[in-house]
Amino acid sequence: MSNRTGPHDQTKTRTLEASPSIVQDAVMPTYARLPIAFEKGEGCWLTSTNGVRFFDALSGIAVCNLGHAHPDVAMAIGRQAETLVHTSNLYEIDSQRRLAQRLAALSKMDRIFFCNSGAEANEAAIKLARRFGHNRGIENPVIITALGSFHGRTLATLTATGNPKVQQGFAPLVPGFQHVPYDDAQALETAIRDTPDVVAVLLEPIQGEGGVRIPLPDYLRNVRRLCDDHGLLMMLDEVQTGMCRTGAWFAADHTMVRPDVMTLAKALGNGVPIGACLARGEAAKVLDAGSHGSTFGGNPLACAAALATLQVMEKQDAPRLAQARGAQLLAELRVGLRDLPMVVDVRGQGLMIGIELNQDCSDLVTRALEARLLINVTAGRVVRLLPPLVITEEETTQLARQVIALIRDFAAQHTAKPS
Ligand code: PLP
Image 1 (tube, helix red, strand yellow):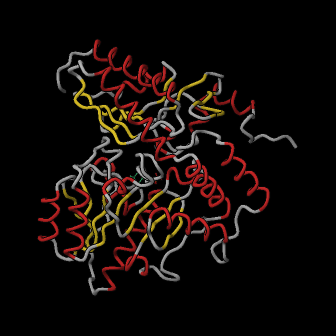
Image 2 (cartoon, protein in one colour):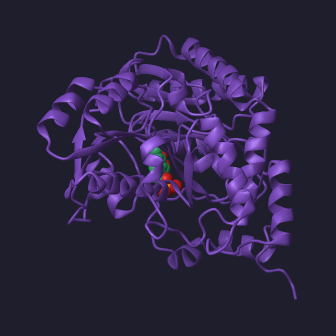
Image 3 (tube, helix red, strand yellow):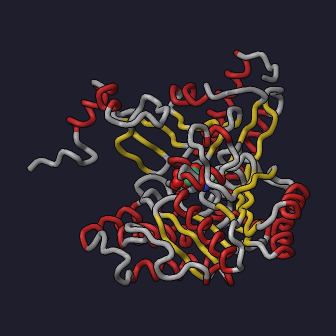
Protein backbone atom coordinates (compact mmCIF):
# COMPACT_ATOMS: atom_id res chain seq x y z
CA MET A 1 0.00 0.00 0.00
CA SER A 2 1.42 3.39 -0.84
CA ASN A 3 1.86 5.89 1.94
CA ARG A 4 -0.52 8.70 0.96
CA THR A 5 -0.35 10.63 4.18
CA GLY A 6 3.38 10.96 4.81
CA PRO A 7 5.14 14.31 4.81
CA HIS A 8 6.66 13.67 1.40
CA ASP A 9 3.40 12.77 -0.30
CA GLN A 10 3.83 14.63 -3.60
CA THR A 11 0.21 14.08 -4.66
CA LYS A 12 -1.07 15.89 -1.59
CA THR A 13 1.41 18.72 -2.01
CA ARG A 14 0.49 19.25 -5.67
CA THR A 15 -3.22 19.14 -4.85
CA LEU A 16 -2.79 21.87 -2.26
CA GLU A 17 -0.94 24.06 -4.71
CA ALA A 18 -3.24 23.36 -7.63
CA SER A 19 -6.56 23.94 -5.92
CA PRO A 20 -6.24 25.58 -2.54
CA SER A 21 -9.93 26.52 -2.46
CA ILE A 22 -11.04 22.87 -2.71
CA VAL A 23 -8.67 21.81 0.07
CA GLN A 24 -9.66 24.78 2.23
CA ASP A 25 -13.39 24.40 1.64
CA ALA A 26 -13.68 21.34 3.85
CA VAL A 27 -11.90 23.10 6.71
CA MET A 28 -13.91 25.55 8.81
CA PRO A 29 -12.58 28.99 7.97
CA THR A 30 -11.61 29.88 11.55
CA TYR A 31 -8.12 31.07 10.54
CA ALA A 32 -7.07 33.87 8.21
CA ARG A 33 -4.29 31.78 6.71
CA LEU A 34 -1.40 33.02 4.65
CA PRO A 35 -1.20 31.38 1.20
CA ILE A 36 1.75 29.14 1.96
CA ALA A 37 2.26 25.58 3.21
CA PHE A 38 5.43 23.96 4.53
CA GLU A 39 6.60 20.43 4.11
CA LYS A 40 9.75 20.25 6.16
CA GLY A 41 11.78 22.11 8.71
CA GLU A 42 15.24 22.10 10.24
CA GLY A 43 16.35 24.35 13.08
CA CYS A 44 15.12 27.88 12.34
CA TRP A 45 14.30 27.09 8.70
CA LEU A 46 11.15 25.90 6.99
CA THR A 47 10.84 24.73 3.40
CA SER A 48 7.60 25.40 1.56
CA THR A 49 5.83 22.85 -0.61
CA ASN A 50 7.27 24.59 -3.66
CA GLY A 51 10.80 24.31 -2.34
CA VAL A 52 11.43 27.83 -0.99
CA ARG A 53 13.28 28.27 2.32
CA PHE A 54 11.90 30.65 4.95
CA PHE A 55 13.43 31.84 8.18
CA ASP A 56 11.01 31.10 10.99
CA ALA A 57 11.12 33.93 13.52
CA LEU A 58 7.92 32.73 15.17
CA SER A 59 8.55 29.05 16.05
CA GLY A 60 4.92 28.13 15.35
CA ILE A 61 3.95 30.83 17.91
CA ALA A 62 6.46 29.95 20.64
CA VAL A 63 6.09 26.20 20.18
CA CYS A 64 9.20 24.85 18.45
CA ASN A 65 11.63 26.45 20.92
CA LEU A 66 14.31 23.91 20.01
CA GLY A 67 13.78 24.52 16.31
CA HIS A 68 12.10 22.25 13.80
CA ALA A 69 12.81 18.53 13.62
CA HIS A 70 15.24 18.52 16.52
CA PRO A 71 16.99 15.15 16.15
CA ASP A 72 16.77 14.12 19.83
CA VAL A 73 13.07 14.97 20.04
CA ALA A 74 12.39 13.31 16.68
CA MET A 75 14.17 10.16 17.82
CA ALA A 76 12.25 10.05 21.09
CA ILE A 77 8.93 10.47 19.25
CA GLY A 78 9.86 7.81 16.68
CA ARG A 79 10.98 5.28 19.27
CA GLN A 80 7.89 5.84 21.39
CA ALA A 81 5.59 5.58 18.38
CA GLU A 82 7.12 2.23 17.49
CA THR A 83 6.65 0.98 21.05
CA LEU A 84 3.44 2.43 22.47
CA VAL A 85 1.51 5.58 21.60
CA HIS A 86 -1.40 5.49 24.01
CA THR A 87 -2.90 3.48 26.82
CA SER A 88 -5.15 5.91 28.80
CA ASN A 89 -5.11 7.37 32.27
CA LEU A 90 -6.96 4.29 33.50
CA TYR A 91 -3.46 2.86 33.96
CA GLU A 92 -0.11 3.96 35.34
CA ILE A 93 2.05 5.83 32.83
CA ASP A 94 5.67 5.71 33.90
CA SER A 95 6.87 8.45 31.55
CA GLN A 96 4.10 10.77 32.84
CA ARG A 97 5.37 10.28 36.39
CA ARG A 98 8.95 10.96 35.32
CA LEU A 99 7.91 14.06 33.37
CA ALA A 100 5.91 15.33 36.35
CA GLN A 101 8.91 14.83 38.63
CA ARG A 102 11.26 16.64 36.28
CA LEU A 103 8.87 19.56 35.75
CA ALA A 104 8.10 19.80 39.44
CA ALA A 105 11.82 20.03 40.22
CA LEU A 106 12.39 22.73 37.59
CA SER A 107 9.37 24.81 38.62
CA LYS A 108 9.44 24.09 42.38
CA MET A 109 5.81 23.05 42.16
CA ASP A 110 4.38 19.93 43.82
CA ARG A 111 1.89 18.28 41.47
CA ILE A 112 0.97 18.37 37.82
CA PHE A 113 -2.09 17.60 35.72
CA PHE A 114 -1.39 16.89 32.04
CA CYS A 115 -3.64 17.85 29.15
CA ASN A 116 -3.18 18.73 25.48
CA SER A 117 -3.17 22.50 25.01
CA GLY A 118 -2.85 25.87 26.68
CA ALA A 119 -6.60 26.41 26.88
CA GLU A 120 -7.02 23.05 28.58
CA ALA A 121 -4.23 23.82 31.02
CA ASN A 122 -6.03 27.05 31.93
CA GLU A 123 -9.35 25.23 32.16
CA ALA A 124 -7.73 22.94 34.71
CA ALA A 125 -6.46 25.97 36.63
CA ILE A 126 -9.92 27.59 36.54
CA LYS A 127 -11.59 24.41 37.80
CA LEU A 128 -8.94 24.08 40.48
CA ALA A 129 -9.56 27.66 41.65
CA ARG A 130 -13.33 27.15 41.77
CA ARG A 131 -12.96 23.97 43.81
CA PHE A 132 -10.50 25.72 46.09
CA GLY A 133 -13.28 28.27 46.69
CA HIS A 134 -15.99 25.66 47.19
CA ASN A 135 -13.78 23.87 49.73
CA ARG A 136 -13.86 27.14 51.69
CA GLY A 137 -17.62 27.45 51.45
CA ILE A 138 -17.66 29.97 48.60
CA GLU A 139 -20.54 29.04 46.30
CA ASN A 140 -19.92 31.53 43.49
CA PRO A 141 -16.14 31.91 43.28
CA VAL A 142 -14.69 34.73 41.19
CA ILE A 143 -11.38 34.72 39.34
CA ILE A 144 -9.72 38.03 38.50
CA THR A 145 -7.91 38.27 35.15
CA ALA A 146 -6.40 41.15 33.17
CA LEU A 147 -7.57 43.27 30.28
CA GLY A 148 -5.49 42.58 27.18
CA SER A 149 -4.85 39.00 28.25
CA PHE A 150 -5.23 35.82 26.24
CA HIS A 151 -5.96 32.51 27.90
CA GLY A 152 -7.53 30.36 25.16
CA ARG A 153 -10.64 29.71 23.10
CA THR A 154 -12.76 27.39 25.23
CA LEU A 155 -15.78 29.04 26.84
CA ALA A 156 -14.18 29.53 30.25
CA THR A 157 -10.79 30.62 28.88
CA LEU A 158 -12.29 33.04 26.37
CA THR A 159 -14.29 34.53 29.23
CA ALA A 160 -11.08 34.81 31.24
CA THR A 161 -9.44 36.48 28.22
CA GLY A 162 -9.59 40.26 28.50
CA ASN A 163 -10.35 40.94 24.86
CA PRO A 164 -13.95 41.46 23.66
CA LYS A 165 -13.04 40.39 20.10
CA VAL A 166 -12.36 36.84 21.28
CA GLN A 167 -15.71 36.78 23.11
CA GLN A 168 -17.89 38.25 20.39
CA GLY A 169 -20.83 36.04 19.44
CA PHE A 170 -20.29 33.54 22.23
CA ALA A 171 -22.59 34.89 24.92
CA PRO A 172 -23.71 33.80 27.41
CA LEU A 173 -20.20 33.83 28.79
CA VAL A 174 -19.14 31.88 31.84
CA PRO A 175 -19.92 33.66 35.11
CA GLY A 176 -17.29 34.19 37.78
CA PHE A 177 -14.70 36.36 36.04
CA GLN A 178 -13.71 39.94 36.70
CA HIS A 179 -11.23 41.93 34.61
CA VAL A 180 -8.74 44.55 35.80
CA PRO A 181 -6.15 46.64 33.93
CA TYR A 182 -2.84 44.79 33.53
CA ASP A 183 0.28 45.95 35.33
CA ASP A 184 -1.73 47.93 37.85
CA ALA A 185 -1.43 46.50 41.36
CA GLN A 186 -3.59 49.31 42.75
CA ALA A 187 -6.48 48.41 40.43
CA LEU A 188 -6.10 44.77 41.44
CA GLU A 189 -6.18 45.66 45.12
CA THR A 190 -9.35 47.71 44.61
CA ALA A 191 -11.03 44.89 42.67
CA ILE A 192 -10.14 42.35 45.35
CA ARG A 193 -11.57 44.66 48.02
CA ASP A 194 -14.73 45.49 46.08
CA THR A 195 -15.58 42.07 44.64
CA PRO A 196 -17.10 39.46 46.91
CA ASP A 197 -15.91 35.86 46.73
CA VAL A 198 -12.66 36.32 44.83
CA VAL A 199 -10.64 33.09 45.02
CA ALA A 200 -7.82 33.56 42.52
CA VAL A 201 -5.94 35.88 40.19
CA LEU A 202 -4.93 34.54 36.76
CA LEU A 203 -2.31 36.51 34.79
CA GLU A 204 0.34 36.19 32.11
CA PRO A 205 3.78 37.24 33.44
CA ILE A 206 4.22 38.97 30.06
CA GLN A 207 1.17 39.47 27.86
CA GLY A 208 1.96 37.76 24.56
CA GLU A 209 -1.06 38.15 22.31
CA GLY A 210 -1.73 41.48 24.03
CA GLY A 211 1.41 42.95 22.43
CA VAL A 212 4.44 41.62 24.36
CA ARG A 213 3.50 43.74 27.37
CA ILE A 214 6.17 43.44 30.04
CA PRO A 215 4.93 44.62 33.43
CA LEU A 216 6.91 46.75 35.87
CA PRO A 217 9.49 44.72 37.80
CA ASP A 218 7.53 44.80 41.07
CA TYR A 219 4.10 43.99 39.57
CA LEU A 220 4.21 40.23 40.10
CA ARG A 221 5.68 40.69 43.57
CA ASN A 222 2.77 42.99 44.44
CA VAL A 223 0.29 40.48 43.02
CA ARG A 224 1.90 37.80 45.18
CA ARG A 225 1.61 39.98 48.27
CA LEU A 226 -2.05 40.78 47.56
CA CYS A 227 -2.86 37.10 47.01
CA ASP A 228 -1.12 36.22 50.30
CA ASP A 229 -2.89 38.99 52.20
CA HIS A 230 -6.31 37.92 50.93
CA GLY A 231 -5.88 34.14 50.85
CA LEU A 232 -6.16 33.94 47.04
CA LEU A 233 -4.45 31.64 44.59
CA MET A 234 -1.90 33.34 42.38
CA MET A 235 -2.14 31.59 39.01
CA LEU A 236 0.32 32.37 36.20
CA ASP A 237 -0.38 31.49 32.60
CA GLU A 238 3.09 30.62 31.29
CA VAL A 239 1.74 28.92 28.18
CA GLN A 240 3.68 31.33 25.94
CA THR A 241 6.38 32.61 28.31
CA GLY A 242 7.38 29.26 29.82
CA MET A 243 9.92 26.67 28.68
CA CYS A 244 12.94 29.02 28.52
CA ARG A 245 11.41 31.48 26.03
CA THR A 246 12.18 34.56 28.14
CA GLY A 247 15.66 33.54 29.29
CA ALA A 248 14.53 31.63 32.37
CA TRP A 249 12.69 28.34 32.63
CA PHE A 250 9.58 30.29 33.54
CA ALA A 251 9.10 34.06 33.21
CA ALA A 252 8.12 34.39 36.88
CA ASP A 253 11.66 33.19 37.77
CA HIS A 254 12.98 36.62 36.76
CA THR A 255 11.06 38.15 39.66
CA MET A 256 11.66 35.35 42.19
CA VAL A 257 7.88 35.07 42.54
CA ARG A 258 6.41 31.61 42.90
CA PRO A 259 2.77 31.24 41.91
CA ASP A 260 0.42 28.69 43.49
CA VAL A 261 -0.67 27.47 40.06
CA MET A 262 1.16 27.68 36.75
CA THR A 263 0.05 26.59 33.30
CA LEU A 264 2.25 25.42 30.44
CA ALA A 265 1.73 24.10 26.90
CA LYS A 266 3.18 25.33 23.58
CA ALA A 267 6.92 24.51 23.79
CA LEU A 268 6.58 21.74 26.36
CA GLY A 269 6.60 19.06 23.64
CA ASN A 270 8.43 21.15 21.01
CA GLY A 271 5.41 20.73 18.72
CA VAL A 272 3.76 17.58 20.03
CA PRO A 273 0.54 18.70 21.75
CA ILE A 274 0.86 18.66 25.52
CA GLY A 275 -0.27 21.04 28.24
CA ALA A 276 0.19 21.07 31.99
CA CYS A 277 -1.35 22.64 35.06
CA LEU A 278 1.17 22.75 37.91
CA ALA A 279 0.23 23.46 41.50
CA ARG A 280 1.89 23.63 44.87
CA GLY A 281 0.98 23.65 48.53
CA GLU A 282 -2.73 23.82 49.30
CA ALA A 283 -3.54 24.20 45.58
CA ALA A 284 -1.87 20.89 44.79
CA LYS A 285 -4.36 19.04 47.00
CA VAL A 286 -7.54 20.41 45.43
CA LEU A 287 -8.15 18.13 42.45
CA ASP A 288 -8.73 14.52 43.42
CA ALA A 289 -9.75 11.30 41.65
CA GLY A 290 -12.68 11.86 39.32
CA SER A 291 -12.62 15.66 39.56
CA HIS A 292 -10.83 16.24 36.27
CA GLY A 293 -9.45 14.22 33.40
CA SER A 294 -8.39 13.91 29.78
CA THR A 295 -8.30 10.94 27.42
CA PHE A 296 -5.06 11.93 25.75
CA GLY A 297 -3.52 14.08 28.50
CA GLY A 298 0.02 12.96 29.31
CA ASN A 299 -0.04 9.91 27.06
CA PRO A 300 3.22 8.04 26.39
CA LEU A 301 3.86 9.75 23.04
CA ALA A 302 3.37 13.31 24.36
CA CYS A 303 5.43 12.54 27.48
CA ALA A 304 8.29 11.07 25.43
CA ALA A 305 8.40 14.27 23.37
CA ALA A 306 8.28 16.47 26.48
CA LEU A 307 10.94 14.46 28.32
CA ALA A 308 13.26 14.72 25.32
CA THR A 309 12.51 18.45 25.03
CA LEU A 310 13.39 19.01 28.69
CA GLN A 311 16.55 16.97 28.37
CA VAL A 312 17.78 19.01 25.40
CA MET A 313 16.82 22.28 27.07
CA GLU A 314 18.80 21.30 30.16
CA LYS A 315 21.78 20.00 28.17
CA GLN A 316 21.98 23.12 26.02
CA ASP A 317 21.17 25.48 28.90
CA ALA A 318 18.29 26.91 26.88
CA PRO A 319 17.61 29.80 29.30
CA ARG A 320 21.15 31.03 28.68
CA LEU A 321 20.72 30.70 24.90
CA ALA A 322 17.52 32.75 25.04
CA GLN A 323 19.21 35.38 27.22
CA ALA A 324 22.27 35.74 24.98
CA ARG A 325 20.51 35.78 21.62
CA GLY A 326 17.62 37.82 22.99
CA ALA A 327 19.97 40.53 24.30
CA GLN A 328 21.78 40.56 20.95
CA LEU A 329 18.56 40.80 18.92
CA LEU A 330 17.12 43.52 21.13
CA ALA A 331 20.33 45.57 20.99
CA GLU A 332 20.68 45.26 17.21
CA LEU A 333 17.02 46.14 16.64
CA ARG A 334 17.25 49.15 18.95
CA VAL A 335 20.30 50.50 17.14
CA GLY A 336 18.80 49.92 13.70
CA LEU A 337 15.42 51.48 14.52
CA ARG A 338 16.36 54.23 16.97
CA ASP A 339 15.91 57.15 14.53
CA LEU A 340 12.47 56.05 13.27
CA PRO A 341 9.66 58.17 14.76
CA MET A 342 7.20 55.46 13.79
CA VAL A 343 8.79 53.07 16.32
CA VAL A 344 7.29 53.64 19.76
CA ASP A 345 9.19 50.95 21.63
CA VAL A 346 11.47 47.96 21.11
CA ARG A 347 11.10 45.66 24.10
CA GLY A 348 11.61 42.08 25.06
CA GLN A 349 12.72 39.52 27.55
CA GLY A 350 14.90 36.71 26.26
CA LEU A 351 13.65 35.73 22.83
CA MET A 352 10.17 37.18 23.25
CA ILE A 353 10.46 40.49 21.47
CA GLY A 354 7.97 43.16 20.46
CA ILE A 355 8.48 46.20 18.26
CA GLU A 356 5.61 48.62 18.79
CA LEU A 357 4.79 51.03 15.98
CA ASN A 358 2.55 54.06 16.22
CA GLN A 359 0.09 52.63 13.68
CA ASP A 360 -1.43 49.42 12.44
CA CYS A 361 1.23 47.36 10.70
CA SER A 362 -0.48 44.00 10.11
CA ASP A 363 0.62 44.39 6.50
CA LEU A 364 4.20 43.67 7.58
CA VAL A 365 3.43 39.96 7.90
CA THR A 366 2.83 39.63 4.15
CA ARG A 367 5.79 41.84 3.31
CA ALA A 368 7.99 39.64 5.51
CA LEU A 369 6.63 36.53 3.82
CA GLU A 370 7.62 37.97 0.46
CA ALA A 371 11.10 38.41 1.94
CA ARG A 372 11.01 34.74 3.07
CA LEU A 373 10.66 35.57 6.71
CA LEU A 374 7.94 34.45 9.13
CA ILE A 375 6.95 37.03 11.72
CA ASN A 376 3.73 38.02 13.42
CA VAL A 377 1.95 41.24 14.27
CA THR A 378 -0.11 41.20 17.42
CA ALA A 379 -2.46 43.77 18.95
CA GLY A 380 -2.46 45.47 15.51
CA ARG A 381 0.75 47.42 15.89
CA VAL A 382 3.30 45.19 17.61
CA VAL A 383 5.71 43.16 15.48
CA ARG A 384 6.31 40.01 17.52
CA LEU A 385 9.48 37.94 17.18
CA LEU A 386 9.70 34.51 18.81
CA PRO A 387 12.54 32.73 17.00
CA PRO A 388 13.72 29.28 18.06
CA LEU A 389 16.09 29.46 21.04
CA VAL A 390 18.71 27.61 18.99
CA ILE A 391 19.13 30.58 16.64
CA THR A 392 22.83 31.26 16.02
CA GLU A 393 24.64 34.57 16.45
CA GLU A 394 24.87 35.02 12.66
CA GLU A 395 21.21 34.14 12.15
CA THR A 396 20.30 36.66 14.85
CA THR A 397 22.16 39.45 13.06
CA GLN A 398 20.57 38.41 9.77
CA LEU A 399 17.11 38.44 11.36
CA ALA A 400 17.67 41.87 12.90
CA ARG A 401 18.83 43.26 9.54
CA GLN A 402 15.81 41.85 7.73
CA VAL A 403 13.33 43.15 10.29
CA ILE A 404 14.98 46.59 10.35
CA ALA A 405 14.84 46.78 6.55
CA LEU A 406 11.17 45.76 6.51
CA ILE A 407 10.17 48.34 9.10
CA ARG A 408 12.23 51.05 7.42
CA ASP A 409 10.56 50.32 4.07
CA PHE A 410 7.16 50.33 5.74
CA ALA A 411 7.92 53.64 7.47
CA ALA A 412 9.13 55.19 4.24
CA GLN A 413 5.82 54.35 2.59
CA HIS A 414 3.57 55.54 5.41
CA THR A 415 3.29 58.89 6.99
CA ALA A 416 4.41 58.56 10.58
CA LYS A 417 1.10 59.93 11.81
CA PRO A 418 -0.36 57.98 14.73
CA SER A 419 -3.49 56.08 13.69
N1 PLP B 1 -2.43 31.19 27.15
C1 PLP B 1 -1.56 31.97 26.48
C2 PLP B 1 -0.75 32.97 27.22
C3 PLP B 1 -1.41 31.83 25.10
O1 PLP B 1 -0.55 32.62 24.44
C4 PLP B 1 -2.20 30.87 24.43
C5 PLP B 1 -2.09 30.72 22.97
O2 PLP B 1 -1.61 31.55 22.25
C6 PLP B 1 -3.09 30.10 25.17
C7 PLP B 1 -3.18 30.27 26.52
C8 PLP B 1 -3.96 29.07 24.49
O3 PLP B 1 -3.18 27.98 24.12
P1 PLP B 1 -3.75 26.91 23.09
O4 PLP B 1 -3.88 27.60 21.77
O5 PLP B 1 -2.72 25.81 23.10
O6 PLP B 1 -5.06 26.44 23.61
